Amino acid sequence: MANSFSKEERVAFEQLLQDFEDALVLSRNVAVYKTDQTMMERTGNVIWRPQPYISVSYSGTDMTANFLAQTQMSVPATIGFQRSVPWSMNATELRDALQAQRLGASAKQKLASDINLAVLTAATQLGTLVYSSSSAASGFADVANIEAIMNRVGIQYEDRYLALSTTDYNGLAKDLANRQNMVDMTKEAYKRGYVGMVASFETYKMDYSLRCGVAAGSGITMSTLASASNYYVPQATVTSSTGQRSNVDNRFQTITVSSTTGVAIGDAFTIAGVDEAHHVTKQDTGSLKSFRVVTVLNSTQLVITPPIISNQGGSISEQQYQNTVVSTSASAALVFLNLAAAYINPFWFKDAIEILPGRYEIPMDAGAAVMRATTEQGIDLVLQKQYDINTMLTKYRLDTLYGVNVLQPEMCGIALFSQ
Image 1 (cartoon, rainbow, N blue to C red):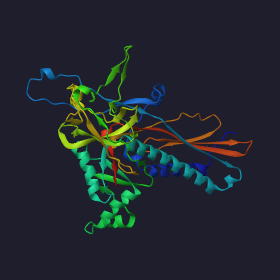
Image 2: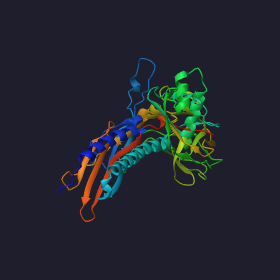
Image 3: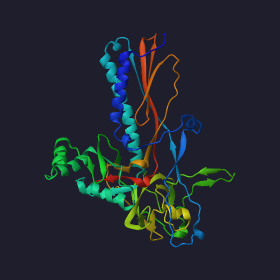
């Protein structure tokens, strides 16, 4: 006889799905892009997602020389997370329905944690806007400074989120709790350590947080002279020697430095004389541009994000996507920002990070019982059950398939305290 789910198990699964959605704290606040699963299988679970265009404007009435081709940059997005929680129960354990419910709840909690952690890791590894404070998180001023970082480069005002470690979040709550003229927020900050919306950010408290190490690189320099070609020229595609064209991931750049000794993946740094440019107006913000180390290639080369698009080459694609204003130097110093081990607190604009829900095609007539449901975000959950007559064991497994992609690293960042 085929395996089947009891009425009690079906009710438990419906409750599990509801609780699962409640637990998706971070992943609820990123964009969702739904794909055709047949197409994804045929492309190795990779799809290229377009980044927003940024246009260039000109003065005057004669535009004869300005009808130029636009560069559409794109980013590879992958459905690469296959997470499963398997467990089994014997014939005597199944007598206790409460135990089965607890195991299901534990599986739900773990998968929700996996998805939240994937979002957290993506934001902390590729977020390029860096707020570094020498003191502990202490209040509204910290969030206001993070807001200023996003505002000055032209990131949209709505749909901003900030996730803080419990220690740093409570430092913010303490500041609000002491403000007697803010009755409702003060009460919640004092009773629950709850903050809510602050300085255009919806804030969240994390019960787990990633940490950064101490940057060990020192005395490192690089040339920012135009002749050194250390500026980056965005391009939509590249043509190989065989004539084949392929897309280019413009989030990264390989730079040459005097030494990579002590440099580690995830390090944050600025470069002397390399200022931020507003994304739209291209004006110098007067603040140094921050970068992150993605890969240490060898003794003199690093892969960084974002690339240094300074318009030193003068191409139309550089004019479109310029993100820096450079005062050139043959030996510009790299100054590292993660000076002490600390929690990494990510902040982001919603559309900068995407979840790509996936779906397993599981046969319904192969002996195992199958139930599936989809969350509001489109994340597919599959519960399977199978009985083994030899051992009197009933096997269960709860599965999900998804991807997380940072579409625009310059629209998300990290806050580091006690540096």
